[in-house]
Amino acid sequence: MGYRQTGQDPEEFAMGDQLELSAGLRHVVDSGASFSLAYAYYDNRFDPRVRTHTFTGGVAKELSTKVTGDVSLGASYLDAGSPYVSGWTVVGGAGLSVRLKRTFFAFRYSRERYQALVLGRSQTVDLLYASIGRTLTRRVSLAGYAYYRNARDAASDLYSYDTAVVGATLGFRIRKRGSAGISYDFRHYHTRGLRGADRSTVSFFVAYSRAFK
Image (cartoon, rainbow, N blue to C red):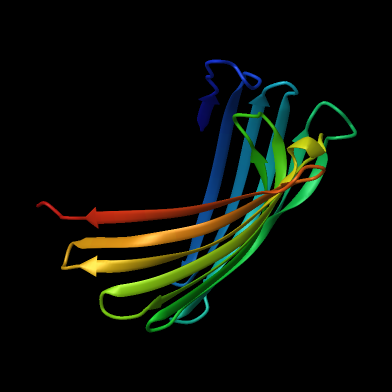
């Protein structure tokens, strides 16, 4: 259960709030397999006001000691107060991860309803994601990732857009408890009828961890 409300000064977007209710049930068959059922309700009290009801079922399975996978399928109903916008859509996804001695791969596709808080819009989002990582030495690791996100607003193309991202991180272990690294990502945004926009980001990080008894 959750509640969110926007606050702006000066006011640039429509004011409103969002109520979220969700429930789930997970059954573990054995140490490597499980089934799940979930229901989620969102009430976006903006203008226009929209509500969504989403039902999903999923299966997760450890295919081997190195490979795990999961798949989910369901349906989501958008109640927008208009027969031209309201309706059902299929949601769900699938994922696969492989972890070898020094390398890992992960792939995922998902389709879901997304209720934006700031703009108060309801979108159907398709996301395709892939990542790869490699331990180069005992203290150095390299990881890369990429994803494509397609967000569609049923009421207006103005709030529909695509995002493509590719990035990489080089990490270093410092003694037993420290770590540092550098990350880079490139992002491309595109909205129908408008020029695309690009953004590049370089970031550095340093971390130290210690457990106290």
